[in-house]
Length: 128
Image (cartoon, rainbow, N blue to C red; front, side):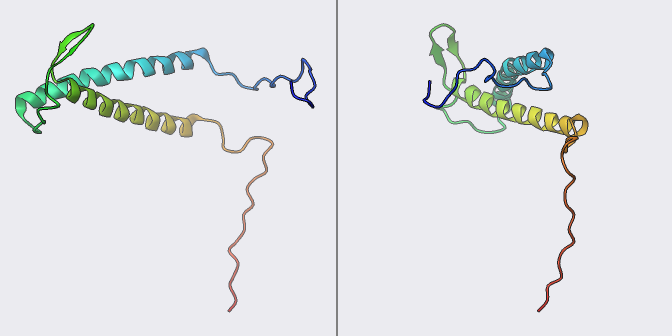
């Protein structure tokens, strides 16, 4: 306890006037778990199709088979890992953009009931 602090049961943070519905926390948790899994599945499909069709030549270091302790041998491990990372970034970016569009359309107004309206001034004329 610091020197000038007073112990009080009322010194706790005040409660917010709004509450987040628990379903939104569940949706966020589900997206955080589901998006990397979908990115991995998409990466496996893209890397395998690239190996068949030959769209982009991949270096030998990225297409080697890696043996993992609990999983076993994994083909194209490094290329799948890189593609998973890229697809996850794209997926999270799309979710963020969609959320910002929905929030700007449906969210609360920019100014609250106690805020003053912005002051509108006309540009001053410059005298030379």
